[in-house]
Length: 402
Image (cartoon, rainbow, N blue to C red):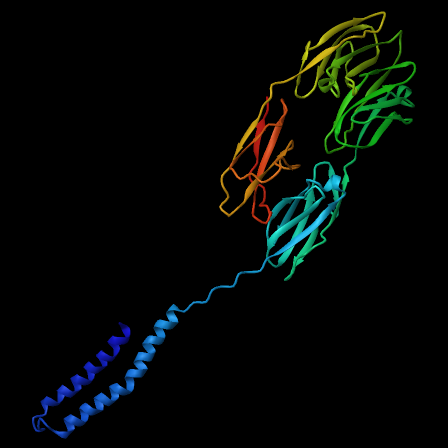
């Protein structure tokens, strides 16, 4: 319509000018001047019409002409974490120009895909391990980046304490049992150390001829940090000492169970792989023995025993698995296009998450049936795209198992 209207408006102007000559009565109707002006008007219109049409068409064409944007190129960052014992299942976090999380495969290899040019930081994590280096930077500049590798080492912690006074602590023998076994000798100040320990539950028992110790045994749980202050008091022995011993069966519930002694003296020990336990160096008196193990109940719940002239044995217990619980998890769908979701769980809020699903979950729900009674769990999820790249962690959800 724009192209057609412009020449018509121009013709009207020229027509009006021709009609104005009617106000000059002295000029005849067939005057050459009138004919000349009309010819000039038509000549001008003929001259301007191509330009007007070209302008209108040009405006229409340029307004509708578009070019498709090229698809941006993307690249990958990959590497491995060795040895496989520390690399397999390790969480790898990408930050910097973009953020994502992935899990190393059984060989410790990992890959982040679909990345644009930019500088990134890669950091691995795995409960019970430290990594060298702790993180690495990688810059993508028109090509994939490979060989971003890390070395994992199992974390080693210690249990330390003091036996006082030094008269009884100096030279005392200290035995470690439970998740690992070791023996050391307290120094001249009564101090002792067990180093290089992995996470787990341990029992510490001092001994020295002519002395009894209070408590006779103490439990210590290593969970990502050193344990200090496992102290004992040495008492000069007066009269004979005795022991209390027994077995917790079956082995599934008895092995590694914690046994608490209270009453005339207090102590804690951990059963061996056969479910056997012993409290030694006890004076005469009445004691109460109570076992515990996560996921089990015991019959009887505890037993009382009095010793005066002989040791007491056969204080046995039966362990029964507790009622099984499950945790039902649900989450909102990602706003991006994803192929599934991964679910991570930890015993510590905010850290130490490990994936619990074998492959990405396509639904918006998941049931964790591998939980223990009396334990609190923390969960997060990630979204996974078709290339296997993961989003950052979701918000954390908490489940308390009774």
